[in-house]
Amino acid sequence: MKSLLIILAGIAASTAALEARNFVFILVDDLGATDLGYTGSKFHETPNIDRLAASGMRFDTGYAASRVCSPSRASIMTGKATPRHGITDWIGAASGMDWKRDDSVLPAEYVHNLPSEEITIAEAMREAGYATFFAGKWHLGAKGSWPEDHGFEINKGGWDKGSPAGGYFAPWKNPRLESGPDGELLTLRLARETASFIEANQNKPFFAFLSFYTVHGPIQTTEALHEKYRKKAERMGLSGEATRFKFDRRLAVRQVQDNPIYAGMVESLDTAVGIVLNKLKETGLDKDTVVIFTSDNGGVSSGDAYSTSLLPYRGGKGRQWEGGIREPYIIHVPGMTKARSATEIPVIGMDFYPTILELAGLPAMPGQHVDGVSLVPVLKGGSVGERDLFWHYPHYGNQGGEPSSIIRSKDWKLIHYHEDGRSELYKLDEDPGEQKDLAAANPEKVAVLSARLNDWLKDTGAKIPTRDPRFDQKRFDAKINAARNAGMSRLEKQHLEFLDPDWEPKGKEPWWGSAGAVEK
Image (tube, rainbow, N blue to C red):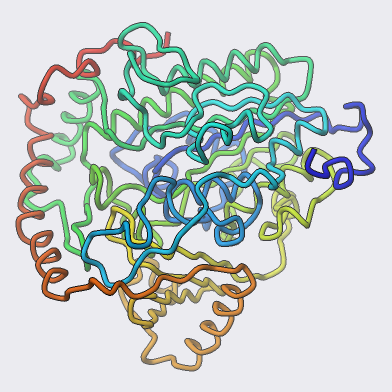
């Protein structure tokens, strides 16, 4: 039992010692910091998520533990920073000499299964008497390292894959979730499975983890939702935009939110969240259920489907700037959080683990959630001690990011690049878009932050990229020039076409005419 009996010594065997609280943790895939109404989007419509934000506390400087999915998810599950648990890239990404994209360093090797010796938050809650439930994206290992192997009694849809095999509309291909009737939207199905679990467990404490595959690619919506947002873009004067992309270092980055396909996905996500919130209210469990909402990494403004813009933040998923790691971050605790409360205290994905334990009335497990702190003092209107936040991503990814490590100390942010050893320094309170590199003007600050970052990298056993002996500067330059020239032209044409009244997906896409993307 992984020493749980020792670690949780002092917990009564019965559930009588538990506080009268249930937990619903909602994790979205690839949702950006500015993709929601409450975070400033004028194009996407998210009334249910906005309502949740208004009911609890918004952490407006909330961060994911990584700029890509698997590492961030592992950190939520374990309370540990990515180099400590070893999953530093999305599981399945090439590393070492298997990386063949004409880059100058070899991405570091990484762990491919959530280590069995880790005591996940689900295992801690289950041992304490909670019914545990998982629905949706897992992406933390192969068979033998699925949700049911890490503390979840019920698993609806969690397995190896990081994107929905077969797409978002039934028939899909998932060994842990039977496909619904043709055209059923996976996003809504996962919400309904969660709602059913809630209804069936009204009389016992539960920990439900709803981990959406959406809004990860492939981006898919219905003809009706596409038309709704195409017309909205037209009304907002966006459909005539001549330029939607800006080239930033290695890839194009979207500069405007006007993608009607993606907007339809965001609306369906919001509808799904509404299904769960409505079930809590219908059963009366909203009065004693903690609801947590966040994303695993930044929105996709570069690479993949180039779905959204995260301005004023720079970059997006996979990238080292704020757009890649800053997230929506909401915690609603009935009887504790004040409606419409907000804080600018920087927080991170590892903080959820100790926060949930304290809210459940369970003892802390400092040997497990090494890198997180409980946010309960903040939820009560107080604070937590000042601390530095760290990130480590010794990989490239698919969105133009560079292998780098980061420290945020108060309002200062230093990015150290592993390709050439340079550092960038930003003052986030004055420059949230990270446009003015202050490193050259502040060598003392660079030295202090670099020393702290290096100490952290050593303490966590972080793996560092090594030089690629195959590197050829001419091939690299040709790759970048192709992305800047032909790549930009192709993207501008494609994304303008999305707003054409006659646009429709190529081929016979079952999702286009589906009626299964509405709540029933």
